[in-house]
Image 1: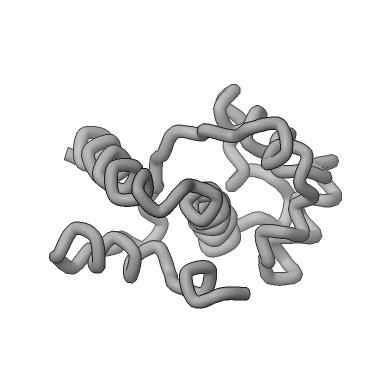
Image 2: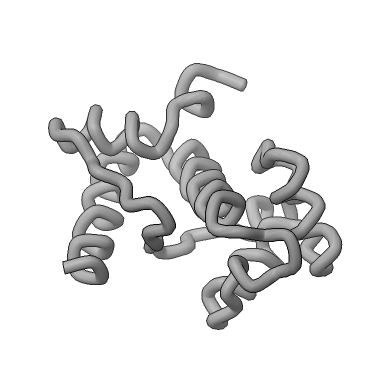
Length: 125
């Protein structure tokens, strides 16, 4: 895992936006999916989830990132999957975001993070 991939969502936003982000316990995190076919076909193992989150997704039938992204975009609440509590749900969403962020060319990352921040400000505001 390279340095970019090991950074947390909060660290990325703080670096690009220049201010600290307060995360609410159990708060929802919103972002748009921009997956190409290769990204969609990537196994969920690429998200490097903890065991509980990974096992809950596998038991629910999600084997690749595209299936998971389509389900979430279609309104499936991953927090309602068996053994997928708020902590696992948050981790899954953060790892999906980080996966997508790291797949973007360097010059598009800042714009993407700004888009995500605006989207979340609207949803939480």
